[in-house]
Length: 283
Image (cartoon, rainbow, N blue to C red; front, side):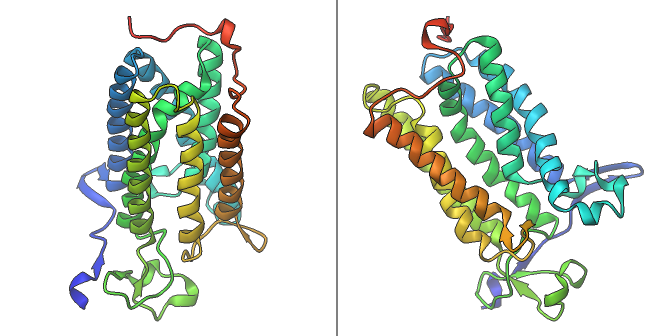
């Protein structure tokens, strides 16, 4: 069933002299714009000022993208030590979503603290946009011929050119399209979060603040743990795959969040006490 085999057309969309337009950069920019539009729409549905999400988006970009690059470079330092000029070459690929999540969360914490806003309410509003952005961004891996899995003969196999193949698989032509698996998994998580969001509009007393953030951590991480077993280019920490270690930690945190909200029936600790929080209602 070769009709389902596919391969990347290459990382570059357009090249005119020194001007190079790459799929990776276009997809990241598209994910940011689509995510911002979505989060502002969700904010309106929650009667929250959408301009607040526009301000937060700037913080997320400033914190998430550099953190994603730093995270990746640190775990691939042996490679970048040989060519330090490539450390800032983010357009060539090489960012880690867990680094982006950590950086974005840090930026959101600071933003919430400075503006005296509930961190968990902000996280609930951006969680659907974040996972949708991840689903879009994964296609950058496709165009860069990276983040693919082990060799396979499945009908939906991905052809990888010899120059992109890992040393142990130079004689293999077709690999698991793990970027596609994760993109589809992320779309599934996106659907779950949207369902919970709109269900929560009709059941405000039952959907507690912080729920979407907790569900995001669990649902995304469960998919990532499975997909990481198929990857051949995982970031490693000794014998352990870093993404799996972080994912198991995120699952534990997500379970703790939901247990705190629904088992112990207590509000989550916030960066600003409720009595000091400013209203973020749409005026």
